[in-house]
Each structure stands twice: as structure tokens, then as C-alpha cells.
Amino acid sequence: MTSEPASYVGRFAPSPTGPLHFGSLLTAVASFAQALVHRGEWLIRIEDIDPPREQHGSDKLILDMLEAYGFEWNRPVSYQSTFAPRHDELVACLLDQGLAYKCTCSRRDLADATRGLLGAIYPGTCRNGCGSGAAAVRIIVDDRPVEFEDALQGPYGHQLQSVSGDFVIKRRDGLIAYHLAVVIDDFDQGITEIVRGIDLMDSTPRQIYLQRQLGFTTPAYMHVPIAVNGDRQKLSKSTGARPISAENAGKELCMALHCLDQNVPAGLADEGVSTIWQWVSENWSARELRFKKEIPATLHGYG
Ligand code: GLU
Ligand code: ZN
Image (cartoon, rainbow, N blue to C red):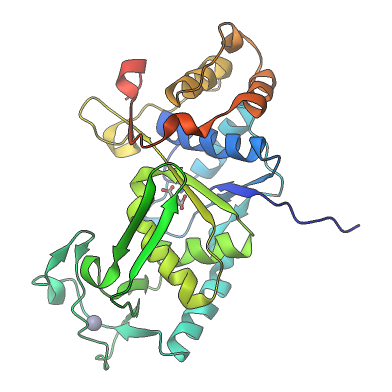
């Protein structure tokens, strides 16, 4: 049987660096809610391409928790590491086309580089050839602005030459860079809208640039506010965010919706998670989050 491809495909793409905490729950809720109101598909992709940062077994903890909270995904969970051959093939393509080059500069070589919005601006040292030994791969950027319209945050863009310069798409240790992996997988999986935390908004122009160099279409973007603690740091494992628990899933889910400025009716928190998602599919409105950047999770007992 063939079926029409879904006209909306969303995704949640956690890195398996620890159990799900309230901050990642908020992003997952926003992303799934967007797919529900569009009657679209929703996928989960575990972004396991940076082993040094990963915590063994946390993929399972994340998936079990999503299941306990009543999230439903339409395809088997994918693991980004399994797409490595495809990633490498496209790195080779970019090199062949002269759109990227090998770079043997060490961190020390770049210590004096000018700093831009996104860190050291690569001075282009290896554009015309590099030394021997372990090499990273960099994509060549230009001075044209790369702009997009975020569904919540409005227009945004970078002129890459002045914020990062030619940036790394494959690391010197052989690992594919996040920017390239995410662009390839989102395209291959047919993702139409990317809903993720606003902390990744800075990454988007580089990712759109890569889409253009690869001849890919650009999906829609919605960067949602991130949960922060009392010191206005993003909730994360390193800032000591508390993992969420499967007990009281309904209450926690309603708290997440409330934090996302949804008008949750009294009593909904006492219902099962499937009733809550039914309510979400009829009532979710992302508009409430327009221009919002932070959610003070501490006020709600998290963080
Ligand atoms: N894997 C990334 C993270 O957990 C998210 C990537 C994305 O949504 O584009 O921060
Ligand atoms: Zn170099």
C-alpha cells in the first residue's frame, strides 16, 4: 500500500547525555503539540554522534519517559550514528565539489584568531592547502547574509564570514559535526518543521547555509523558549536539572503546558496523559510563546 507522504513531519532529537529533565520535556511537548495540531507525523531521533558526551543507557531512559508521558511517534526511533556512511558520503561530495577543504590547524594554531559572535573566526589558513596528519573538514562560507523567518522569534540571520568563518563539518577526531549531521538527517527524514530550544537559534544560519550547499530544501523553524534556573542558566544536566519522573506524569505534563503559556483547564492534570494530549491536539497554540526566550522554571519548582 502506498500512502501520501505526511504534509507535516516534526521531530524530537535528544542527545543521549542524561535522563529527560524538565527543560527537555518542554521542548518535546512543544514539538509533539505542533505535530498534533497539524495532524502530522512525529519522529524521534537519538543524536548519538558524540560518544565522549554521552551517558550509557540514557537513550532508554529518555524513551521510557517519553512513553510514560504518552508521547507517540510514527516511525521506529532512529539513531543518528547509523547514518554515518551517508554523512561521510556527503562530506566527500562537498570536498570533491571544492565547497569544503581539509584543515589541520590545532586549537593552539587558532588561539589568536579574532573572536566573533559564535567564537573564534577561522582565518582561512588551510583554504589553499594544509599540512599532513589528522584533518578536520571545513565548509567554505561567504559574505552573503543567511536569513530566515522563525515562527516565533521573527527574522534572524548571520553573515557567516563575520561570525564563524569557514566552520567545521567533520572534526579532527573523525566525528561528524552536529551541524552537518542534523541537516542531512532532517532532510533525509523529510522533516518539514524543526521545533527546538532557542539556544539553538544561533546554529540555524549555519545549518541553512549547509542545506543550500547540499541542494536541500529548508524546513520551517520554530525556536521555543528554554527553561532556566534562578541564575538564568539553561536547565541542563550540568546545571543540576532534576530528572522528571514517571509518577504524576499527568501533573508534570500539565505543568509543562502551563509553562508553555497554554490555558490548561482546572482538573486536566488529574486526567490520564492520553486525555491531556487529546486536549492539546484541540487547543495548542504556539502563538502564546511569540518572542519569548526564557521560562523561569524555578518559579514552578524546577531548576
Ligand atoms: N541533539 C540536540 C540537543 O539535544 C538537538 C538538535 C536539534 O534539535 O536540532 O541539543
Ligand atoms: Zn587549518
